Length: 262
Image 1 (spheres, rainbow, N blue to C red):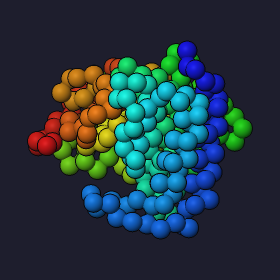
Image 2: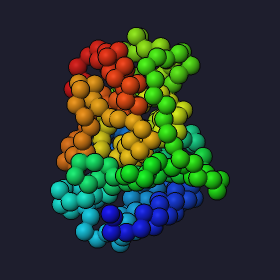
Image 3: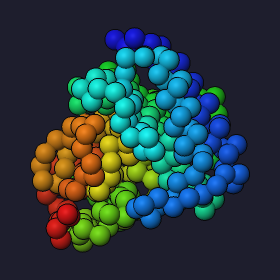
């Protein structure tokens, strides 16, 4: 039982999504030390989300892409990626997300991912299903499990996965849309059969994880370990596979990590 109304958190993310749309094309773009973009929109949205979500549950900690970890790492924590797909945001590619996950005891128990350019908002609460809200309609999400694939089946991955994983034995097509959160919600709504990520941070997957799990997916690293949220962990060096159970089992046996991921 959460100490706040989940609808209040959803509305906060919805407001942040509109802020991001209003700021696109109107903010300064800087280069971070890792040679990636950051904008004033990233910073403003994270500050806004920290303030508003913090008012819902003052005892919770925060982990955000731009401001790092604040508070007790063992306490429940909001995990924020203010704009997942900042490169797309800067380049006017209409695929980027506002992602928020709530982590309790190593699990994502509440997730909200807004896709402002598509007017979509996804959310899930532990035990209450995964949902897509768009154009005034609310749709419950449920993935299809399978053990065989055709060429037209889509598997999503980020760039780091492409560099280390061999897909030759998989009968499907691969897609990289430039945002891990979007890959995950695309999986939850059934557009993808699986999603992979590598060298990602917790804030990349925390919001989408509850949505994928509530839609019927599991998450395991390609070395066999189950996914567990750790607020103090850095980049995940082993590829993470998110998929329905049988699909994930089949892909886990087929995908080959062809080089060291460190």
